[in-house]
Length: 345
Image 1: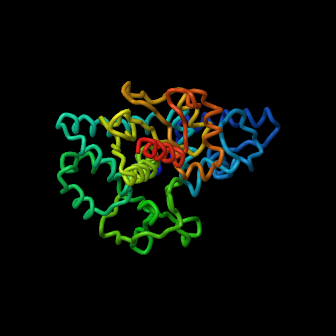
Image 2: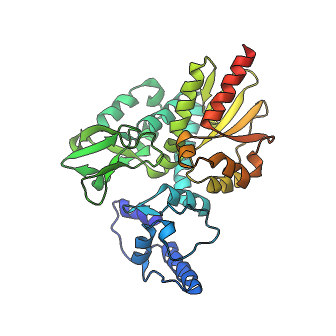
């Protein structure tokens, strides 16, 4: 991930490779020798191997919390699996950058007593991961976002060169993010693995419009769960139930009902066992006044792993039924909300 970040930047790349990448090659080589399997001959060979699905590796990776259909790289870019593993194993830089920006947004909005500005900031990032300069200026003219204009601009980078073809930037209709080309340069795919409808073409923008793209760590930690957060909030509101997004400056993702309220932390991790590791280390703090608390798994993740919630509960006893925080699917959470509404009616 560090190497990909450097390759995507404006800095000139020079040897040596990042030290941790070389260390990974050394460790993998020792593991391969121990198993009598062929080892990558160089860092380039390691990067080529990273494009392969783990199920095709001749080297067995014990206790690695991976699925056989996953890979570390896809078309030269880190996959969601790579990002999740990096978050568990020390993607400190990405988390620090994310937290530094989010903390600055929280502090400025809190000091101005403007929680609506914080909510508007997160909604913009989720709804518009790719945006033109003109639209960005239009959004920043809104009162709730004007307060955070500097932070909003910091959240977006210029689109990468590979996103441009024939003077046009292509977006995805499912998530409004970027579509990037495959190796043949004719097939375009959504760059967001958590996109609700990745096969849907979106708008096309001329390069002259100055298209920008949300920073990688914000796409991973804010946009990915954000699809489900906004969807759940809309569904709950449609039931006539009060719902708040990121209340008290992100004390939780959702707060439902005015009294005896329920709180939820929405997750979009691709792999339930990796999420279990994170939850065992860092389970969200439940407000004392909350009646119930949930870890909610988005429908895209449940669709990809039909036994997602069961595997998560097995790997993380802290979120099993009967605990203070219970893991449920997005659909189950909405059923529970509706059941309470009907019971109280």
